[in-house]
Amino acid sequence: MPALPNVPDVVRVVFSGTYGDTKWANIFHLKVDGGPGDATELSDLLTALEPIYDTRLLNLCSVNAICTQSEARDLSSDTGASALHSGLTLAGTNSSTNLTAQASCCISWKIARHYRGGHPRTYLPGMGASSLADFNTWSSSFVTSAAAGAAGFITDIRAIGTLDLVHLVCVHYRKDGLQLEEPLVDEITSSAVNNRVDTQRRRLGR
Image (tube, rainbow, N blue to C red):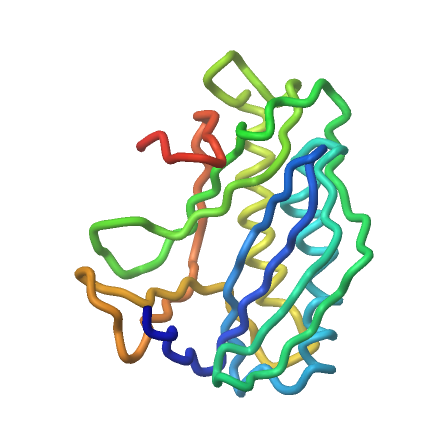
């Protein structure tokens, strides 16, 4: 498989951790106007992002969903800078009974471009039973909180002043089954949260 092409001014950020014995990761892409800079600036970016991710998204999860590290990598070149923050102890706030590690809340990220196929999503790890309305759906109050968290995540990222203006984006490396020489980068403009209980292992449809 050929190496993926470079993505100018884009940083891949990964928050990862554990939920009991299960490992999880949430991956985001950020476009930094003017370029992401060196390893120190990427470390500063992580420092700014960690409380945003914790407050807006991870707080929706179980207290047993623990983020243990964050990582940022400049995708502008094969030798782009990187930064790693290990030893984190960020965690969710829901102290009710743990749901299975497969159960997940899905956030759909919206972009202006229309196309067929998979769209950007984030699957939150490790959910608490008190967020359920029944076996198949999240409660309306939880969906409201999750939607507010996702919207706040976008807004807070735009307000980061550590570097130049930062945007939450999605990156497409392929189109119509073919790898692109220049990846498509689309800014995420809004979000949506479905009340359906999703799974980390497979999509359940619309």
